[in-house]
Length: 269
Image (cartoon, rainbow, N blue to C red):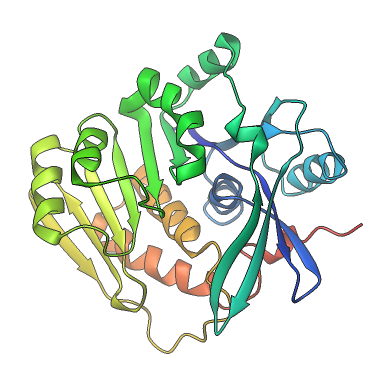
């Protein structure tokens, strides 16, 4: 079976309203689902800082049976405040010094050669961290764009011309543009559309998958991560996209029905 690397961020998601904290971050969430829900050969790689959270982070990752390659640096760990209102989550107070200051070592980058898929978040703060990975391993990279700040159609075109595929959270670009870019570059583009379901563009084929009806929305944190995990698992297993798209929507619907992207990942002191 293909080997998958979930590369990017491990973060402490802090819910002040609930007085709860969870281990999260896009990369952790995807790795958690790939391993625990879909039995995929996946590894998590992310910066690990030195602060009060470090031992808890490592302990929780180990307890989830997630292989972890820590990129240790002498900065505080990533933390993020999450406020939930009517099911929608709002981010605040993002402590991101460890990724903003990160400089790759050649010995670390060389480890990525062992993997068939490299799954990377591509929100604004992490793009400089991911850039050297795209430069070296673009043909293996699947990007998760749930924050389009600074990404116009030209930049999307540049990215899709080199990477394996892109997931986009929301209707950030026109359907005709996405269809054209996918066909021109032979890469896939997946778009999650909340209550409208999802779209999948691959070469000259466009597919739409209906959303799951009558889902009680508690917290949308991690919904895109769970969708992407299901999508990647289907690709790794060689399932037809007609099956994978519906499966991914159903799995994401489960994720929004509770507080926290992965409830088993709650961290307490």
